[in-house]
Image (cartoon, rainbow over all chains, first blue to last red; front, side, top):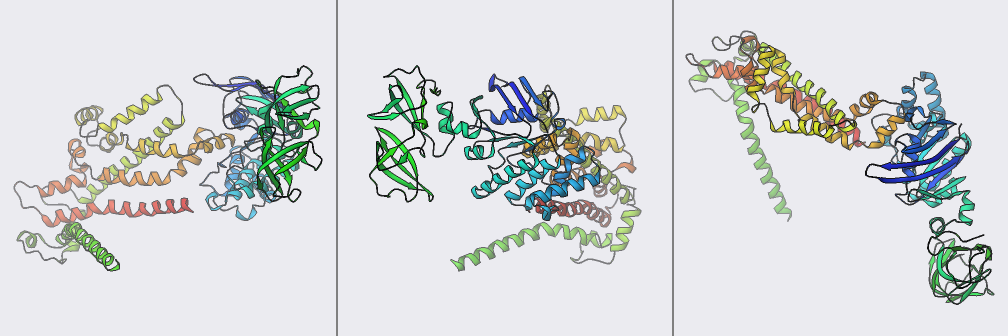
Length: 355
Length: 282
């Protein structure tokens, strides 16, 4: 059990390519931290530096209070689950899980006990003698997790562990990982580019972009109060609508000729200033007496919900509503929105312009 | 269409059969000749079926040898050839696995230079560098020894290249997983790289054993003693005789014997080959 603290960590590759530009993250003991961002944002590099697979150019990484910058991966007391599982193809499932323990000189009966225990947790007892090739994707994923569990490490590192699975299995394994992490209480760092995984798994969500942390915090906090346009559009599906708008005075902006009330608005915004307005598709509520009128172009049926694509004040807009609530042949919709759910972003920097 | 295809199939089989017969006939003739006595072969009336001298010919060849030219029992030559071929095959596998492992997995100064030097030796087969090699071997005092037969032929790049190509297909994540599992470079080599390379090792062993077994020029140069000659040289000596009748029945017996070990290696290793392949596909 240990907390992980990353302080001002940078990674510069030969040729002066700066992959990670000074990142500081503190993860409490037993916390589940998810690093999310588009590909090339440095999230995997950061994870690999914690694992010890990449050297840290500058800054400090501590696990359980101990600086691990110069410590070999095997001595950092971590376990890692790789994207392609990285199981040893020539070893049985049992040997795959036991290998790390054997290298550490763990006694045979202890290895046996731990492998049995881990395989029971993961439900893989029945194929301990099989080779990885004889297993399905989901089973291999479990074995990779088993290999991590038997070590009883201080920290679990997950490098996009679910991206090779099909959609259904991904949802199932996501739940299992969360349960398992809760049950074992091991500090975990999880890298993904899937914002749904990020939202559901984390109790500390770190959104990265271009080698920097854009925002970190509780998933709900990040979702409700995105610190920048990047975070706002990256987290959430369908993504937040962003429209050009103009400040109309205190607590009001307009998109085209449609005026919206705003609760969270920086004090220094002057009327007439151009601004970007962000509206989450599910925050726009369809009501007969809504003050905003949207012209509907077409509808996407998702089963539980429907997506309405249309125009509001000259800007393209998508809204989400529960199925059956709105007639599918509606040409115009009346919408209303809670002023607290209107987000403002600076036109140039993309930063949030809230209080 | 169907008509055509059967005709095509038959034609293919016909050509194949002719090809097999052309290739197999000399081998069969060699075997037949090894079962007749010298007189029958020399007067040109040897039948196309095996004769009654099988046991005698093989006994004489293996344990007594020819009367004039080679003076050594062929069993000794076979042992020499076998030792040489095994030393070359095993030595080459050992050296090339290690050097390929170094080139692929270690970052050291002049790594690529080392690799290209190894690569360059591909352009210098034994025949090209035979004089300097002979000089070196003679100066060390390796003439007429097994070391002299085998060591110079071990040094070449084919195996290194083969293993390098294979190692590069091993995913990096396996190395990283090993690192996290606490396996150092040697453990990673022994526990992961080597077991995964077994089919490549088997393939290289087959190729190199046959290469070593069939060596002619090099053994001819550095062996002078009868007790060190290899079977390939033995056959040659038996056939070319200046002032005596060629003992064809013994020469043919030797030829048949010379074919057996490579065939055995191919058959045995083929099993391992297939096993490795099947294991991987499962």
